[in-house]
Length: 289
Image 1 (cartoon, rainbow, N blue to C red):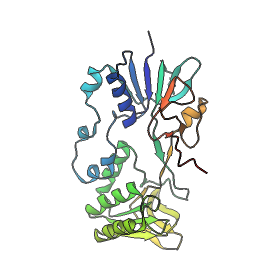
Image 2: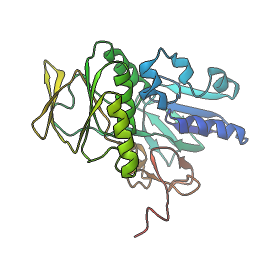
Image 3: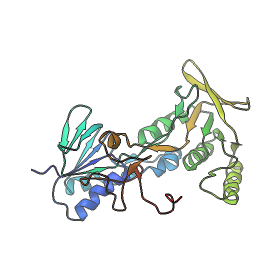
C-alpha cells in the first residue's frame, strides 16, 4: 500500500496542506506527525485573548476532531521526527518508528531566538510560541507583579499589552530606537509607542540587556547595559524567530536560513514540499543585488 502523504509539523501550514490535499482529490493516506501534544491550533490568540480571558482551548483548534476523522487524516501527536531517509522515502521518529511516504511535506515552523546573555535560562524566563508556552505564562501571571518584555516586535508588544491589562507592571526593552523598526515607518511606530504608554507600559528604547539576574534559580531582575536594574517576576523574550530547517538540512535538502522552495513550494527533492515559517521563498526583490 502507498505510504501516501506524510506531513511533518503541527502548524497551520500542516493542517492546511492536509485539508487542501483531500479537497484536491488526494485519495491515498494522509498522516500529520506533530511533536506537540495539541492538535493544530491558532497561534495569534496566544499573546492576546488567551492570556487575558477564560478562553476555552477548544476554540483555538484549527479543525475539529471530526474533520480529521471524516477526511481520514491520521493525526499523530507527540512525535518528533529525527531524520528523513530520502532514498527509502521514510520519516523516522526519535523512537525509531517509521512512516513511509510517497510525498513528504515539511511544515516544521520556526522557534524563538534565544537571548545570548547570562541568566537566560533562569526559571521565569519564557518565550511564547506554543500553546504549552502560553499555558505556562498564563499560570505564572496569577502570582506575578512585574513583567519585563525583551523585544519590541509584534509578539512582545501584544503580550505586554495583555499583561498590562491584567494590572501588571510592564516594561518593554527594545534595542532599536523605535518599536517594530523593521516593520513600521517612524510615524506609525511612534503612534504605537504612545498607545502603549497611555496603557501603562513603560518603554526602554535603545536599551540593551547585559544580564538576567536571579536567586535560587528564579529570575528577579534584568540588568540593562546602562546599569539600570528592572525588577522582574517574569521575563518574556521576544527577539524574533529562526526557521526549523535542521531536519531538511540533515536530509541534504537545499537550505539558506530556511528550506529553499520554488514558487510551487517544491524543495530540491521532487518528492518533498515545504510550507510555512520554515521556508525561504524566491523573490525578485529580496534577492536583487
